[in-house]
Amino acid sequence: MPRYKTLEPTAAFWSWRDDAACIGHEDLFFSLEEEAKGERREKEERAKRVCMTCPVLGSCRAFALETKELYGVWGGLTEAERHRIAGRHRTG
Ligand code: SF4
Image 1 (cartoon, protein in one colour):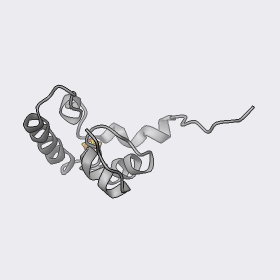
Image 2 (cartoon, rainbow, N blue to C red; image 1 turned 135 degrees about the vertical axis):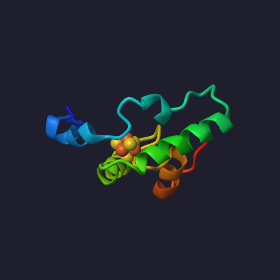
Image 3 (cartoon, rainbow, N blue to C red; image 1 turned 90 degrees about the vertical axis):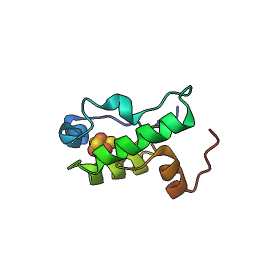
């Protein structure tokens, strides 16, 4: 039977998130499908401004890029920006 490597979060694994500037602002960082593009862009810009004040931006960005996080603003990068960095094309 094949064995699959799975992410197993530990306290240390997630510890950088304790200092996240986005705690309490989670709604800003993820958009719903039904949100208009203009509304989504405005939320993304507001979220990115929060990221610019965040003491763990580097750890967050590295995590999102390494784990190929698909959704939301992470480490000051939008979904579209991370897709571009990864060389992927966004369809939605
Ligand atoms: S960089 Fe942005 S998304 Fe990442 S923890 Fe900080 S505020 Fe949250």
